[in-house]
Length: 447
View 1 (cartoon, helix red, strand yellow):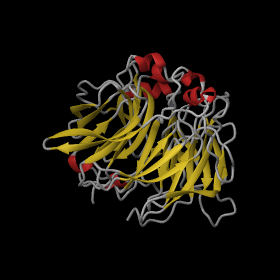
View 2 (cartoon, one colour):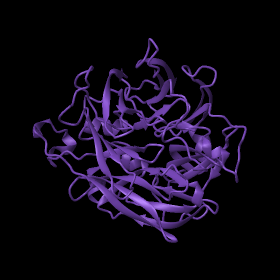
View 3 (spheres, helix red, strand yellow):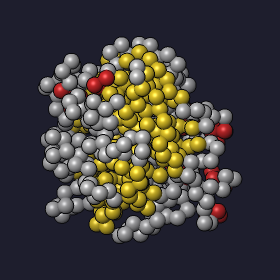
């Protein structure tokens, strides 16, 4: 039913800034019949250099789960945390989807005192409320990070989610297999490790996350930790299978310290336990012009792919992987989650190559945050990771943009839409949410 739903007509895009001016939630027209197709039609300013980053809907299909139903919620609010400022903004899009209204702001003190955490990051609507992961602890930004809950109806923070966290300390993403009463969390780093750009010293000492954690949802207890090995640094986006009868999912490792490659791993149910296996290696590249490397990579002399996001189609067939460093967007057929097939490649941006857009010409940055329509036919992506990291890897060329690709859902393959290029000017462009939902918003209780 989600795949057959009407096509999205607008996108909401987080647009942080680095010049002291307010961040904004931007609205982009996606209706091809509109005179403003492919253009920004609204900007709602939020705070000042708060670094709005990831955000999500207040409600999704998880509200229909039989053991924790919330039949009166509707998908009308965007929950927008500020990763740097620790505020949370609530936006109402019902009255006019092209012009969201700010209806509530939870300031940093309220977030910290009620949740026990700071630096809120990822938002998922779940069966018991709105779940938000956070990187730091209210007692110490060194951690532990974790997850807290927010009420579906009034957006009050209910408190810390974990009861027994076990060895988990670092935090990043949070998602689940509701059919198995299992949650999964991943690891990035502490706020100090990401705040001013990636620290090569921290990387060298292998301080970033290299594990995922398996949790018993009902008892809120960490029951197993899967360690990818500390050669694999920054284990980020979790993409579980959408079909709730499938007990597997995909996660990306940003950097292999031995060869600067990135990788995709499949976690899976293995009897009574869970296992994890690497399924894709994406190698680093030798630059054609080493002089064009940014200072952060001069001594290394290589361009890591820096896989920082990926998205899984609702039918669990295609996985789209963004290579922010090398300027590539890769499509894999993952019908067999242990034997992926490369079925499509796009090139745009990149640290040294700056692959052009068909209409806009050369661009800075590379594919970063990726979102896919529910029918799998339209792929949207932006070019900003985190302001300080943008400045480190793309100095002087990190102004925001958003593009669209059309997908061949039968045989695989994708192609940039030459008529769609959104220039964000001095703002950056990060996460995208699509009107009515998208391929990383919903959790299903029924296959």
